[in-house]
Image (cartoon, rainbow, N blue to C red; front, side):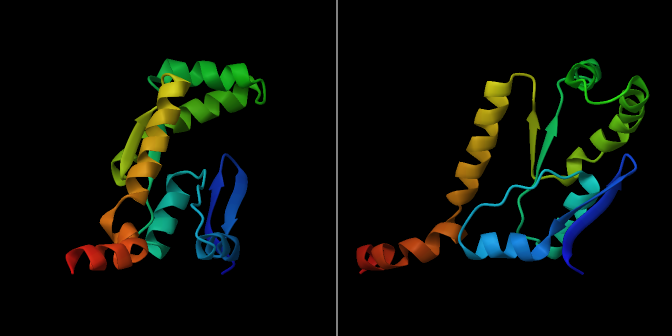
Length: 138
């Protein structure tokens, strides 16, 4: 019960502290979680207002190249990740936004645009702008 989300990914267990996330949200901070589709699904169940962004490679070969070039995983692990990649990619329709990470600068700008747009949603602005809006509306 201490985890907001948890999942087994590539034979490793991962999880996110619910208390940590709630503490950051309570302090008015944006919280970004780098999690797979399983974790994202759990977060959306617990926080329906959460905004989700699926980051995809431009194509499957670019993904293979990126995994290989990291130098962190053996050839066997890269191949396993590639085998699982199509399953991961199949979950993109579950997300609010889709960013194709072809060019890092463009993908970063896209993510920044998502954050900015979400901060500007009327429901998020209404509380902080209530006094000014009330004065303008008379």
